[in-house]
Amino acid sequence: MKNIAIYPGTFDPITFGHIDVIKKSLKIVDKVIVGISDGNQKNFLFSLDERIEIVKRALYKDLKFKKNKVDVIKFNTLTTDLCKKYKSNIILRGLRAVSDFEYEFQLAGMNRKLNNQVETIFLMSDVENQIISSRFVKEIAQHNGDLKKFTTKSTIKSLKEVYELIFKYYNYFIFFFLNKFYIYGEFNDFKIKRW
Image (cartoon, rainbow, N blue to C red; front, top):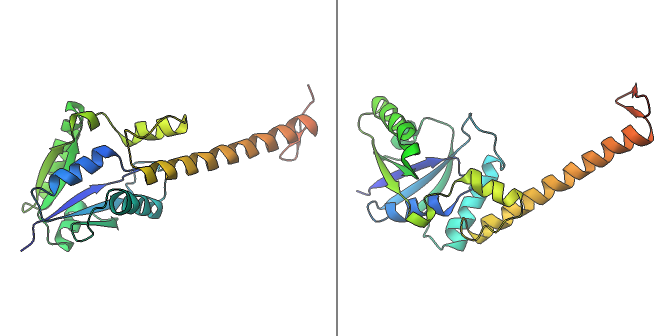
């Protein structure tokens, strides 16, 4: 019987920290299912379907992971329900620092209460990747920083494309607003007193 682990997360976007956890887990389990969720607590840069594609490109194209060893799926259920569906009793979680531990410890306890057959395994990424977070990667991308040490080539390309699009629409909005405000002296059918 195969030993299958579920690695849940939002992966917005995937980083080398996430990838370290996947690599290390494959030393102790036969297969990892990367479960990508639309957690209701976050504002996402990428849609769920975009994140699925970004993770697949990063793992299969950039890093050449085998599809029979790593599967990428989306889910909107409890992680313990996902474990039942895939006949897994292992949830993988990555730890970056002590600050992650309290939240992860509570989460593992709640999952254990929901299904006492499920164990959570905590894995640390390599030292050089422990400080990486998706949030910081997005900030660096937003300011046109060098992302090579933080995520894969295809993920960098996706980040650049989305921020170029955001910047483009932001400029269109500013142009439209200033055009209406300064040139015509009106905005949304309200007359605005000219300066």
